[in-house]
Amino acid sequence: MTWGVGIIGSGPGVAALHAPTLARTDGDFRLVHVSDAGSGRAAMIAGRFGARASVGIDTLLADPEVDVVAVCSPPSLHAEHVRASLAAGRRAIFCEKPLADTAEEAERLVAECAAVGALLVVGTNHLFDPAWVRATHHLSALEGRISAVTVTLCLSPNDRYHALTMGEPLPAGSSARRPPLDLDDPEQSAAIVRQLVVGLGVHDLPLVRDLVPETPELVWARPIAPVGFDLALRATGALVRFTTVMIPEGADSLWRVSVAAAGARVEVEFPPPFVHVGGARTSVRDAQGVQTLYPIDRRDGYEVEWRALAALLRGEAAMEYDELRADAAFVTAIADGAAEAVRVGGA
Amino acid sequence: MMTGLEVHTEAPAYRAAVAELAPRVRPGRGADAIRVVEGRGSWWEGLVDASAFVVDEPDPASAEIHERLGALGVPVVIVRRRLRPDVVDDARAESVAPRHVVVDAWGGRTDATALLRDAVGWARVIAGGPLSVVARAETTSAATVALRAPNGVGASVTRAIGGGVGGALTVTALGARRVEVRVDSGSPLCEVAFDDDEGRRVRPARRESAERLALRRILDAVEAGTAVPDLAELAADDAVLLCPS
View (tube, rainbow over the protein chains, first blue to last red):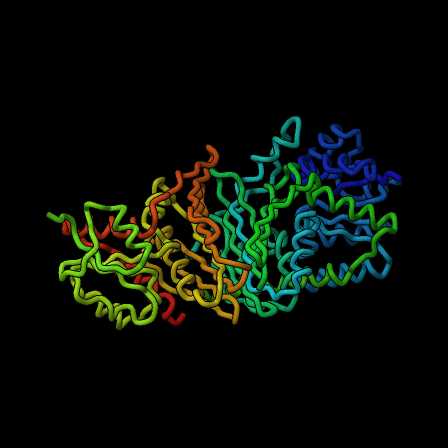
């Protein structure tokens, strides 16, 4: 069966990512409808894929060919658009990360999905990357305690990668770029750090929770210019260091998660966003000192997250609402703690 | 007639290094000799009866000890295989303006304190100055420290105990041009690489033994009468270990 997908949103994450990614799912999905808020970009995207376009969400949600709603609107609208999808009777939703801005809102949304049996996948693509699945299996098999987890991001602008997944660029959207951090303004810094943790840290904090699931205690958090943060956590007896910097120019993006356990060290290096050059690169140094470099899976997290939704639709996998709740609570607790630490100049 | 400075050492690796530097040096125990001191325990007590010293992998020392050593007045080269000065030179070979520096280290429990100290040393090198402690945390199997250089560049150093056989550290300067240093007990060679919009450039491997490098540096200092910064740098890095946040 091929499910029709209606995408709410018309940003680069739609044009350069989800719309073309649907073509990688071996016919599980096809794009049938795209909507925007009036920019006209939805029509351009839809035109490229033979889909329909509309303004606002009502026409899309009323489209009988839309089996799956993909909520790819600005993050502040995710909750509203998930709810609207449920209200329109849609029972399969893909929501870009973050699901919601607060743990309470995420809790309510997941509960509302669960109450009607709606399937919900949140696009935390790294969590779906086959390399991460392999890494966690490896660590689980060791049964060794995790000592430390470090996450290091040094990101180039995403538009560098858009050209690799689009035939022609789309007109720029109206959304302004995030302003650089003003390190002398703790309120502004705190707000941006929170936004970064919720919107960017959400890629990898669910991975951290996979390994150290207890509620974390924040050790420090501080902003990094021009846009970034550095924080440390203590959770489940382990230490976690998470550092990210967004750079307007320069080197290719670096996106690395390292895990030290008693008997092994695992390093997972994710590819830059948007591109499809396979999944992450994983290396493991085992207790005997043997270094194993795993082959890179041809599938990446973007593709697998959609396949995961297909598996749910086919009844091959069960919805884990509690995991979605817990991931959202984990991320937002860290975001709130980091913002407060930055506000009071904690580090 | 014998030529060259005397080197007082019983350690096989340093005796080999003496042979590899002949005729600039030769074995000997005279008052003007260069003495090689093993860095375990109270290594500072061995810094006597010589004109210059090489201290091999010193255990961390207190601020009081370092204050005493600061008044020593003779050249002292410190051998830190995880923080070789030639690799430091490589890491400084291209201009990098880091926004932040991260250092991840892991290794065995026996060497854990010195490993953290050397990881802090790399953070100092790449961040561009002596570091002050902003925050820290420790568990039974890991430690992490938030640091800041005088120029405002932050550094985050994490050391885990475990990770299998051996140990390693990875240093990454985050910025438009990155430099990454990998030091791994599984290889005698360190790797230094620069990444920018031109791609990745890897520095040639440094293949001189750590012992020969140390003797060559102390010889250069003695012959030229120049100061060696190693003790002061060691003191700065040791101070981070002892500094409360």
